[in-house]
Each structure stands twice: as structure tokens, then as C-alpha cells.
Amino acid sequence: MLNIVLFGAPGAGKGTQAARLVGKYGLGHISTGEVIRDEIARSTPMGVSMEGYIARGELAPDELVIDMVADYIARRKNPVGNIFDGFPRTVRQAEEFDKLMQRHSTPVDFMLSLEVPEDVLAERLLLRGRDSGRADDSDEQVIRNRIRIYHEVTEVVARYYDAQNKYVAVDGTGTVGEIEARICAVVDKYL
Ligand code: AP5
Ligand code: MG
Image 1 (cartoon, rainbow, N blue to C red):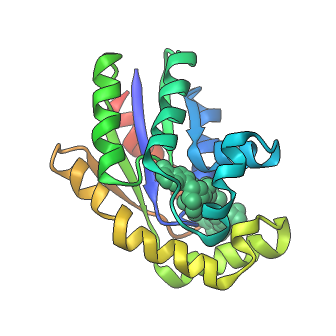
Image 2 (image 1 turned 45 degrees about the horizontal axis):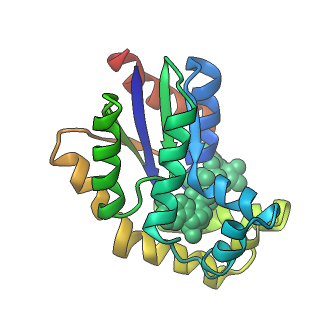
């Protein structure tokens, strides 16, 4: 069983590459951002409570996101393993996640970090905002806020995994296929 934390700034390509990995290896996948957008779209109580955070480009409260992942792990028992996309995003989330995975005897194998320069990130997200209309992509200020919060709060999570010798950086620039090949070279080593 392979449990991968897929890490990177907003627009780094986590969702794009996660879909490729699901297709190639049959891994399960949870994107906490997608779960939140789905809750908002269905106007559930949780969705309503999260709407403001997403609209401002801020992180949702740790407890809510941790519960979301705990629920996923309890329900989805994929024997191949899982990709955690956009989670954990704070040190607190990473610590709680470790405890959770220990309880299930399914520790995180490694964090795969997609490294992309900031100007490329903003460009990708603005482009998507124009095409798909994702609410948090349509305003450049909100995009900048998401990237700022990534640097202030989330980036240190990489060090948390590095301290456990579980941090792997991958160049996230180039075509989707080129990046996929780099990621698969890493995954194949662990399988
Ligand atoms: P989330 O949904 O995780 O958004 P994000 O981290 O801002 O990242 P994105 O999904 O925008 O980017 P991505 O890395 O998946 O890249 P993608 O493949 O889409 O989170 C949204 C919000 O939810 C957060 O702001 C927060 O409020 C909340 N949240 C989520 N998780 C949380 C947590 N753990 N704790 C607290 N709050 C949480 O690609 C981006 C674009 O680039 C696409 O248009 C794609 O087509 C394009 N693209 C991808 N690869 C390439 C390439 N190689 N070349 C050219 N274009 C490319
Ligand atoms: Mg995503």
C-alpha cells in the first residue's frame, strides 16, 4: 500500500497529476479543496460555513479538514493506496494526520512536492479562472492571497516530512506529460 501526500502551491498541478496517477496506478484520491467545493455546491451546513474562507483564499479550519480526511480513510479502503492532494496544509494537520494513519497502520510513504515558480502559478490560475470560472481563480488578489498563505503557513509542512526523510521534490514545470514521467519515476521506485 502506497500513501502519497501530493504537495505544492496553488496551481502547482496537484489535481492534474493526481488524475494521471489514479489512472495509471489505481490509487484512491482525495482533494480536500474538491470536497469543500462540493459541499459548497450542495449548500450543506459545512459548505455554507466554508464559503467565506474559499472566497477570500484563506485556509479552512484545521478541525473540519482533518475530519474530512478521517472520514475518507474510514470509508475508502483502497488496497493500492491513496493520494492526499492539498492535505496536510498546516503542521497541525500533518501531526493529526500522522496519528490517524498510525491508528490505521497505513503510514504516509512520502510527500511529493511539485516545485513551480510563482509567476507560472499565477498565470495558470488566472487562465483557469477565465475558462472554468472557479470562484477562487477569478480575482488576482485572491490568487495572490492563496500563494501568500502557502508561503506563510503551508510551506513549512515540507520540512515536517523532510525531517522524517519522506520529502521528494519534483520539477513541476514543462508539459503535463513531462511532469507525469518525473513523478512516475519516483512512484515506481516505491512500488
Ligand atoms: P485546492 O482545491 O487544494 O486549491 P489549491 O491548492 O489552491 O490548488 P489548485 O487546485 O488551484 O491547484 P492544483 O495544484 O491542484 O493545480 P491544478 O492541477 O488544478 O484548495 C482550495 C481551497 O480550499 C484553499 O484555498 C483552502 O481555502 C481550502 N483548502 C483545501 N485544502 C485545505 C486544507 N488542507 N486545509 C485548509 N484549507 C484547505 O492546475 C492548475 C491549472 O494549471 C489548471 O488549469 C491546469 O489545467 C493547469 N496546469 C496544470 N499542469 C499544467 C502544466 N504542466 N502546464 C500548463 N498548465 C498546467
Ligand atoms: Mg487542486
